[in-house]
Length: 384
Image 1 (cartoon, rainbow, N blue to C red):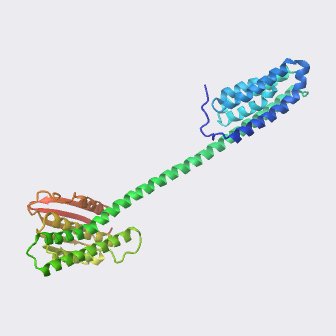
Image 2: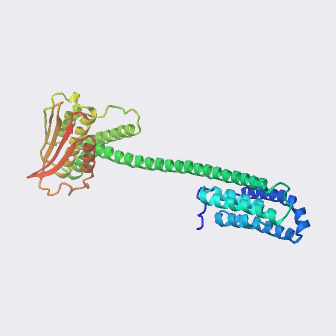
Image 3: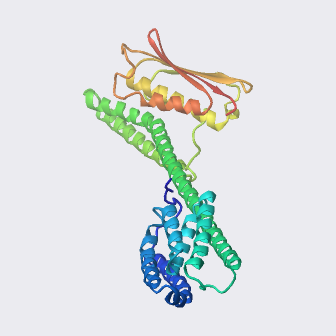
């Protein structure tokens, strides 16, 4: 059964390949120099066989990463008649041991020890010591090579796991950054719509009056143009404040809360809208800022929609609640003959953003069509 290439092994550089082969050549030269005299005395033809197998083993060992087991077995067999193949055989054994496949390591190690004992029979007197000392030395060297290979494999796997964790952490960080950017874009779009839609609808209404009213006196035209300019400057000022909040800087003035709701209604009434506010909250200042701001934006969106889709229709704003319960908000306006509240300019994205804002505050928003009226009704927890 072939062994798969080591997935943890780093690619070999030219220097890495060079020093490994140089070390193998040194080991092979030392081993061959100690046995060549005995080969010449006993079997001269074996010298050339030894050198030929040794040279071939240096070529064959280059495939140890693709076929580690076959390479290690073949080179171990070669050492039975070739001392010059000892260096490449040791490198193949270490390479196989990096996989930490114990049965294969034990099998190839035993084959290497047996091949060393066979070499002593093929070349008599190659070693002057007794055969059991030679076998013991072979076992020690083979075991050391196997342990070294297993240590290298374990270190490679550890380094690979650390790099993999670092890559995964980097990918997760990039994903979090992208998600943060998407959420920030949604937040910017929601704040821009809530703040600017109200002001721009006022500007559009007064500018339309200048375009279609031909009976206005010069004084009325100047007043209307001045009002348009004033609302445009207010829109720019609020845009700067929103950007300041989104950039985590101090805004030029506090963000609106429930306390500012009456001022919003007064502003809409001053532009000609018929708005009635019924606020039964005992202490608007006691409402948390986040909840109060959500109520303010909800009423602001309702007034903007009424101005765009049902101009001239009366609007009723009802706000009530208690500290130990929920805030109940209702914005109701007439339909003014319009069958679909989004039939005018706009795609209903303001209501989508407002629903998200209410849900983020822990509340619920209901948009419905009563007979002759369009209703926004929300329930928000007093405590955010």
